[in-house]
Length: 340
Image 1 (cartoon, rainbow, N blue to C red):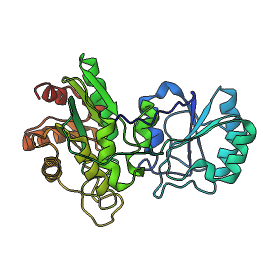
Image 2: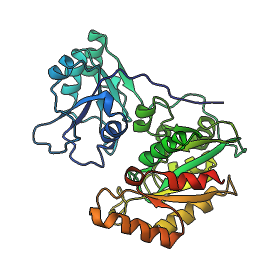
Image 3: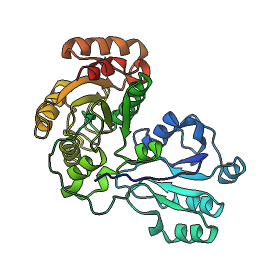
Image 4: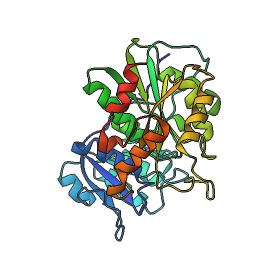
């Protein structure tokens, strides 16, 4: 059984961030701009919001004049609901003929004003975070092909960026590779994937098995991770994805500037070594040969002069390639995958 939540978004896009000021919660918009910059015409944010994603500020009228076809909600707040003060902007966009795209938990059609506007204008309300029906349970049966999963010391530490960069690297080197999106932003970037965190718990591992099916022996599925085994809020999703993916390899993703778990105040971020060991131990349930091939570090918040020394020290400590995928590329980790 092969699963895919295929979507079709009309470009160019306008990224809505509203009153969201934290890059952590604006990762959807930032990710789309990072990986699909040519499709983004601009951003819309409320007055006084100094979070700038590096694209032009546009009103809805200006966006329409610029040929924009879709407004994408570029933020992922805790709880996954649309703010009351966002609805009027989205209604204006729908009335102006733009499709409205959301990766949040609550469906767009549940907002009466928005549904009415879309129905009247003939525009689409597109919910990316919709689980397929008739999902299987996990079986643990071995599949052909190879799989590498991004795991993290916490949420939002670079798992999606690492997977995208590694998949691009493998393909650039002439290898067979597919980026497997497991979250709303990845799905928007790739055009397909599986929103793993909206699936009923019993079926998460089975869904992970199904969306990474049998493949050629030399083909790599590069799987976007979700959450962290160390994050009490989302560890269940992380564990099920780990078991269902049956990865031959993992890449540990880490933010060295993060001191506490994002959604669990007072919970300390684990060391890279502890995170690696726990994921290898848990992953061995469905793949006894699982191994770690490298560390991917988000150094964006570090002083530039400290970035490479940090990576070098971590590499010496772990005996593994340690890279920032945006700054260094992923060749060192791809080299490790070549010998598996």
